[in-house]
Length: 301
Image 1 (tube, rainbow, N blue to C red):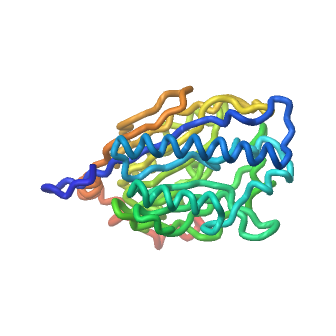
Image 2: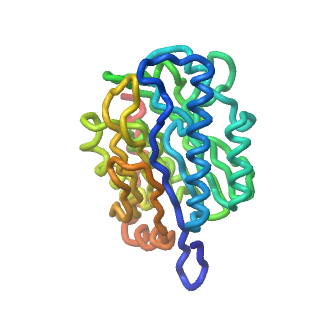
């Protein structure tokens, strides 16, 4: 639990990894089925959020596009109908109520509709009093075979790399494919993030060999905590592969301090001592020793 006793500031954080159970094995995505999917996933996450509250979680992050399947496995316009406005859509309004009820900070990734034809892969951040603090829009959008056709659904983010000063910690968000790019991870650290959350949807055989390499490296290079989330199971009718779970937290030294299972739905909880950030940065002065004046070619190539 959060504590200011002595020199320690501990925040209890949680990650939820789940799967979608509703999608029809025969395909078919009529409006009724789309609503059933969203309703089922919402109810599932509300129950996990209640469990998180009972375990004393103060900051909780859901998985990428938490209230649906990973529909980017196909290119169908019907999925545009699942996008919602942020913060005025029904899902974020419901999450604001939940955050206030449990005095819990929530990171809520959903499919965002800015206007007809303009959609983003976005995470809303809600403070422990239910206040909407802002959002992060996924900046790096993949279009990779097999089954990651994201440019069909999402515009690249246009909000930069914001951080959010919540009741318990200053946090940042990086979404899925973003994690392959160190530049944004560094920007989040420079902007003041103490904890970075990376909700993802990725399958075995594609990215698993990178899963526990890149994000601990970001944490160590920038001296912050990182929570990485991946969903589990397979999703019909696409069956593009197994979402391999293995959600985890790592500390500012890049050490994994808690890890979820590979194939089970679960809530992962870990206590993060934010005082470690100062300790690590006092040893490794990466921010002091940066030479941004020498990096011009990085944005010109």
